[in-house]
Image (cartoon, rainbow, N blue to C red; front, top):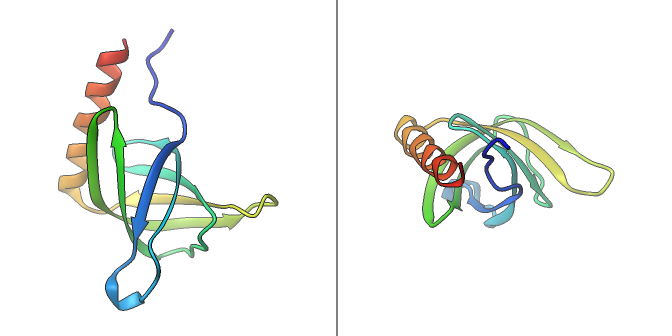
Length: 106
């Protein structure tokens, strides 16, 4: 059996203060060191920037800057958004956390 990250990692996210948008939360359905797929009830639009906070195992990560590359509203009312992480330091930290988690479950 291949080691895997947990499915549906809870994540909080916020927006730049000048956007005056309320913080929200959702589920990370897919996660890699450079990208993520987020499911949320919060309306998101392509090219929007946000800051994600979440935990992998016992390691809290964030805020990690990301850009929405694709956002679609599903029939269930949830938005599915493809995110690209834009902070290189955060991407390296996330990569290390993912590798530690996978090594621990192997």
